Image 1 (cartoon, rainbow, N blue to C red):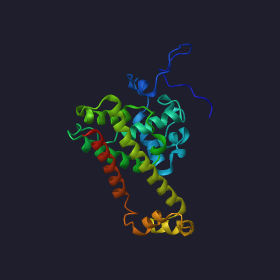
Image 2: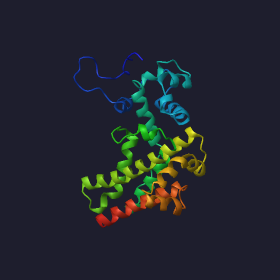
Image 3: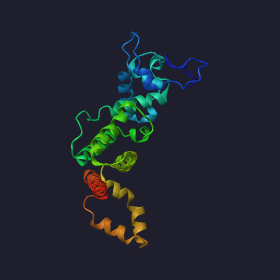
Image 4: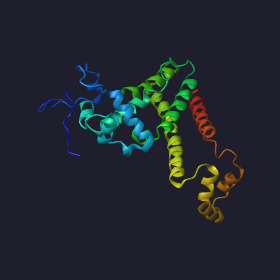
Length: 251
């Protein structure tokens, strides 16, 4: 795609200052609208496409078609697909239920936050790939702000507070990435449930177990009863993480 002109309000040519971010531009008073197009409408339409067809299906041309506007219309707000993805991620994070004040119990707050983040990622699997800790946006920053408020009265210094937050959210991201990857594999192979998945993987697994090299894993295969209970798996692991934090810092 040829380079497009940056949205109105960016740093003028010849100015050495770094260009204004998407969020700085959107925070400025908006000019009188010439159309009903808004950042929220753009985000909603793009998220709907990504949810249905994946992130690669989201293009500026496809977005214009979904909105029924001219191909260049969205460039009034975003400079291209990178900023469009920023807008989408921020929109999805904005739906997390963080409005209530953090509970006095830090563990209750962090556990609820982890469950909400998992639900968000599973509802919008493309966010596992698109949302990173470094794609800073207003609604993404509201998440650590909420967590830090819950941890503020427990005597942790700033670095430790961030380490606790990243430990919990790192667990969420790793667990959800596994779930999303498994769901994608099932969809691609046409497997509808755990039984079909195990049947599809059986030839390889049978050979591996037949080598005798993995006796402990083989015991798991025969003894496990919650292989198809991802909610239990996630929450059990989460409680282990929170137990470890509580014990380590005597919280």
